[in-house]
Amino acid sequence: MIEIEAVKKEYYSLTYQLSNPELVSDKKKFEELTKKKEFLEQIMEKEEELEESKHKIEENKTILKTEKDPELISLVEGDLNLLQEREKELEKEIDNLLTEIAGLSKNKGVGQLSNKKESNSIIVEIRAGTGGEEAALFGSDLFRMYSRFGRSQGWKQKVLDSRPTELGGFKEIIFELSGRKIFSKMKYEGGIHRVQRIPETEKGGRIHTSTASVAILAKPKKTEIKVKPEDLKIDVYKASGPGGQYVNKRETAVRITHLPSGLMVTSQNERNQLQNKENALKILEARLLEKKEEEEAERISGERKSQIKKAQRAEKIRTYNFPQDRVTDHRTKKSFHNLEKIMAGDLEPILKDLQKSAK
Image 1: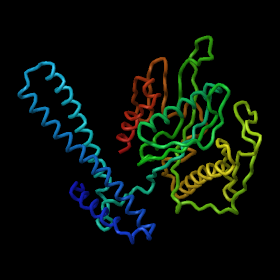
Image 2 (image 1 turned 45 degrees about the horizontal axis):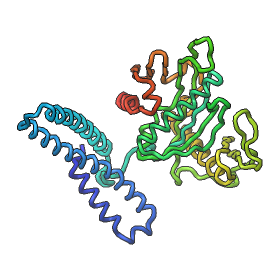
Image 3 (image 1 turned 90 degrees about the vertical axis):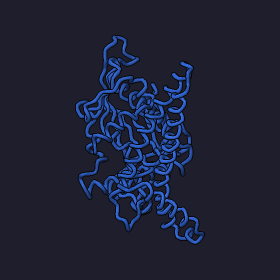
Image 4 (image 1 turned 180 degrees about the vertical axis):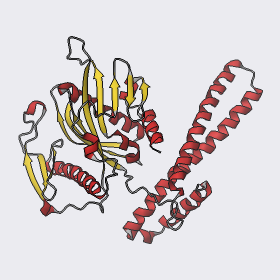
């Protein structure tokens, strides 16, 4: 494994190189070195926090040796337990980051990432499946869950397109999430999500089962996908709201058809045509990248067909059972309780378990 001292050496070398004013003119190299530095910065920050935690642990141990006040001893012991748990977490996080760069060629430097699929921006598509209006409401719940999880991670979010229903659900919602190492964290969310609960509109109190599909698409880098203007057919129309009624008098919604592939995307969330066009192009580029990788290799984990299929109940990756206050991931065959907390964005335990099982 790469030693932390090697990381520090590489980091300071990159910092020195980036301070050279002449480097700014070489945009490609400047961006490459900046990305390397940002990655190593994660390790440096965690190493600094680890050293601080160790120092506080020693301070608390010293206090416990001499302190006589039972109340203060109890407080210090509680603080010590938390610090020791965080110490273990940080050591594991640092080890994972060091492992990620351990197999790289020395000629490339430890900051060169090997995972070409890693992306700092993703497109998330949620669609209502089986279950009518209840499926649309569940799609809205999933959107809210991912939004809150994203905020807890410090990610940025932007809705690119949506088709809301009159009761507040979504037949479809497409949004962009941006943040450090976001694809590796979210890629396991692609698939069919199933919910079992009593709908608010159900007078008989019967438990309904509904589904929604989630697709996670990596947003391509500028060099990965090049869309030619002549390959696009762009149509504009009036944006519509729940029930299909028109909400704008002007034609601000945009539909783009990519003629070579036949792919069609839309966007109507913004109030101006130009912004909707930009949003639609983001969706199109992400789908074209996925299509390209699908053709290059069948091993792509984000393959749209395997994620969505026909959105039937049996083709599920996870079940959210409200009566039993339980979420079950069918890939790891593990269940998690406190469903309300999970739906409020506490996805970390589930995602960590998925990442661990995938190694």
